[in-house]
Length: 135
Image (cartoon, rainbow, N blue to C red; front, top):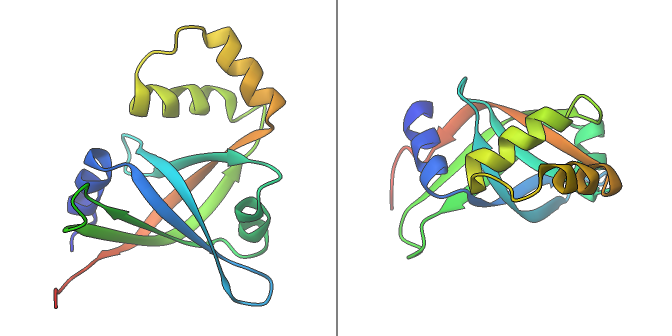
């Protein structure tokens, strides 16, 4: 599957299961909502203290699995994640919210919540997308 085709699917179906690796090599999975930046970078908001963030600091490999509402079509993307922390992450977090949910009713409140929750932005450079075959 072409990466551009996978990114179109992600834009239409932003809910995903994110996979990172625990210290012992076993998977750690989380439900997330992903956005796609203009340059094709996939972005996810999470907390500095989350297991996925700690795992990615140790091993940047990441996979996300997206599916449609009827559980019939799916896309997996694989890549490497960079973690952007506050304060650098604040405006990209605002843009992430806008891409997925539109305008927030109170941006000052949103920014305060991002700081209080110690939010970071995961920036995923997509290296591979699939499936290439079915069945």
